[in-house]
Image (cartoon, rainbow, N blue to C red; front, side, top):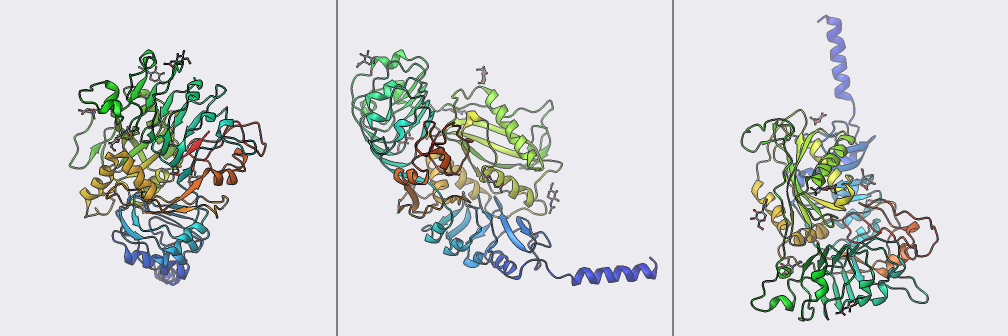
Length: 540
Ligand SMILES: *[C@@H]1O[C@H](CO)[C@@H](O)[C@H](O)[C@H]1NC(C)=O
Ligand SMILES: *[C@@H]1O[C@H](CO)[C@@H](O)[C@H](O)[C@H]1NC(C)=O
Ligand SMILES: *[C@@H]1O[C@H](CO)[C@@H](O)[C@H](O)[C@H]1NC(C)=O
Ligand SMILES: *[C@@H]1O[C@H](CO)[C@@H](O)[C@H](O)[C@H]1NC(C)=O
Ligand SMILES: *[C@@H]1O[C@H](CO)[C@@H](O)[C@H](O)[C@H]1NC(C)=O
Ligand SMILES: *[C@@H]1O[C@H](CO)[C@@H](O)[C@H](O)[C@H]1NC(C)=O
């Protein structure tokens, strides 16, 4: 090297060293504080310039930190109030770090730019700070009675073109109003399971002959079993865990071909010696597993798996849960091939380094949700780095991925990734899996965990100032949870949706937009879409 070049190199080096850090001072201090309270932060978190030296999971806009995405990193610790200084933060995704615990700092509410706060599968506890109420947060539980129209106010009975009432797993009370149903309706799903509904099933339900799925399980319904003569396309009728009269099994039920009926947990099934099939819940499963693609599976070293392309690698794993798939034949591989393709398409469109995906063991869990094991294999290498995991985790935790329509809405419970390039996270492998999979085994418990620990702040939407705050103890023994969810009554939804007008629908989720010709400010016949991330009611 000539002296001249050497001088140039030295000068260049001095310049490199002298370039000031690009990261805003206060942002660095905040990240440094997070780093000091967390275990297992990415090894790239060194130095004093998170933006300039590209810390894993951190995105910046010029000097300011705008996004922290750290799904499945195995982080341990709590979330301190230092986060408050990150005043330009828009996305905070700490999903699937089950050892992140402690209360959520009220300071989160001061992050005015925050649009996505995704804490699915973390162990934060304590109340949701009131200050989060100052975020545009829309979430969770529906309380009160099912509204039907009166002389002056509209109700759900007017939604005659709506196909789905998905109101399961809320806190609805009172009776199911007879006025709700009419022969004009085109409903195919009525999901009222897991509420606090009382009384008997109105006979008007029998008028809705388009109905395919009727879920009424886990309520406090009484009275005779409904007369569903003429409901010829009904394929799934779940009335489990109620108190229906212990009378003769109605003859019409046996006339309906291809109907699965469940009455487990009712007096009719509590008599000794009852061995009827409708008292034994069948939870179909299948041995489906993504087959190898014209190759012979490799035999791999410990912990590695052979991908569908027969390469040994460490996949990113987790559980996909679908609440209302429209098919019940888990033996038909067409559905799963379509799901694999849509996952790959989504990963590719986000330029993620994914080689292939592997699905296995489709099964109905105790809540009758469809569970599937997912393995995501790395492209070109045998393992993912942290950037890749945080981005794949976000596509799933934020539900950016949209599954094929037959699967309906989903949620994902990711495992901690243990095989990062440049080092294995030493600790807690088995416990991490244990808790997530263990919670999943009781699907309801998993959902409660998601509902309890998942907080999604939906951006740019009308703020729900006056939403009632209710402390509801979700129960779910031992499941990490945030107690105290924000509940909405239909009254509030009416207000925020301008009397259920879908033109004012708050947010759109897994199902796409409602179509309507009517832009009237009153109740649209087509229903409205109320599908927030992790929220649990949809009418469309
Ligand atoms: C059930 O309804 C059908 C038609 O609506 C009617 O013909 C039948 O008598 C009813 N059965 C009972 C047991 O009420
Ligand atoms: C399906 O369920 C049965 C019991 O209900 C169980 O023995 C079998 O192992 C399950 N199959 C799969 C593939 O999980
Ligand atoms: C599997 O499902 C697809 C899509 O619904 C359907 O077209 C096909 O006939 C089904 N195959 C079998 C064997 O049931
Ligand atoms: C009925 O309740 C029991 C006990 O709480 C539960 O294990 C079961 O899964 C419930 N059945 C359904 C279909 O939800
Ligand atoms: C992580 O992996 C992606 C794709 O494999 C690669 O483009 C990127 O440079 C890697 N990042 C680091 C910090 O190694
Ligand atoms: C998160 O998901 C929502 C809804 O699917 C989408 O609108 C939003 O763009 C996603 N966020 C990012 C940063 O991709």
